[in-house]
Image (tube, rainbow, N blue to C red; front, side):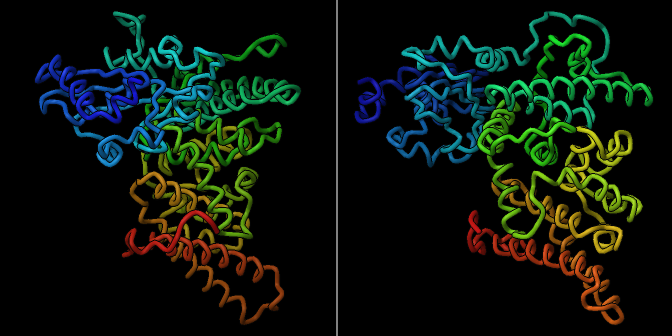
Amino acid sequence: MQASNYLTKPRIRARVLHRVLGRLPQSGRLVIVGHSLGSVIAADLVRRLPEGLEVVGMVTIGSPLAHPEFAVDKLRDMLKEPPTNLGWWVNFWNAADPVTTHRGISSVFPWIVDFRIPTVVGVHCHDAETYLADRAVAAAVGLGLFGSLCKDLVPADSGLQVPLDFAETVALMALRYAHLTKARLEGEQRDRYAEALRRVQASTVELVRARNEQEGRPVPTEIARLSVDLSDPDSVPPEPRPVSQLSKEDAIVPLLSVAASNVIRPFEISVGMDTRRQAMEDLTAEMWLGGQIGADVLASAEEARKALADGTNWVKWVALGMGAAALIAATGGLALAVAPGAFGAAAITSALAAFGPGGMIGGLLTAGTLVTAGGGGIAFGLASPATTAETVEAVVGARLAAALLRQRQGLEQDPATWSDLVETGIAVRREYARLQTISDDSAPSLKELRRKLVAVDRALTYLSKLGLAPGQSASDEVGHGST
């Protein structure tokens, strides 16, 4: 009844908003927490606040804003972009809550961070107490009020916190993703996956420890705390904490690397696409990036695979470790000399040199090289006979997937993607023309070059179709999504 009155009776709605506004100061900092209908009022309110009042953050729980009936007074149009006075907005929901329509609100407002708490079955699944009892909700409220998740009034020790480098960041994300995946498995498959994860986590920590000791660098606390005692068969590996310091732009390479890799390598356990997608959504929600980018990571990879048609299957790209290493060697490292983002080529190649292309970390780093491969030497490296067509398909597919993910997320495109592909096509055609004049038409080298050209041409055609070629705009887009 209250919801109906607020939605259908303008006088009641105006009275509610006027009463709340009347109790607020004209300036200062504010944290808004809204449950159920309160989340709708909060969304309705945030655009009406005094100019001098800054909303540090907004936490909504059990929100019905995804339902079309709650689009009052052009609310959805007004909130297509984040309000300038709003620092951040995180929304919590659980799959059993019918009021949320069993989903978050990023489907309506993509810039909002959705976080799904563990499903609560029963009559109390929508209660505010149910949501507020969850640690993640409490952490979000605490972040808004105090600006830190730390409970200590003073530092516990005087030691410096060692920041994570690229290899440590992507390894931590992969382990967290593996734990989220394990939580969604059942029965014997879950048991085997858990044991594989236990061993992989133990070896990952030891590899980082050995690498850092050799380089004279301390092991970050977030990695050190994940140690596993394999001598005790009943030991349970500590769960990694979410990685939450990355922007969407900086997260592109790590997320695509995790999605493309077997995170329990060298063990192989097939996990369904739905489970992988749900775990990836959970991962990006925990990172305060929103669950939608997690879904977009896998959707972009699948779209890239379909666009290349005969290209390498996305989940098999990790097997191209030696191929990527050969690509780096063939160009003297030039193929990875230029890459966008905080985790660019230099960080990845130095880490790859330390860990090698094998193992879980090596597989992640190899996938990272495929996503970021660029620069003046990439065309020469891909055209080289030392680089297989399979590797070229992987590199082209990874670059295409990154471009599609950026488009889905409204991020700025990497201008090198198009130019690298064009230059690669030119280099491959030159090599083909050089060999074709003497070689048999059925020569394996020519077949490899033709296969490389197919991958490059299909990627360029698809980027052009989506309006992502230089000089094109969104209005030039011919279609998106299905191929």
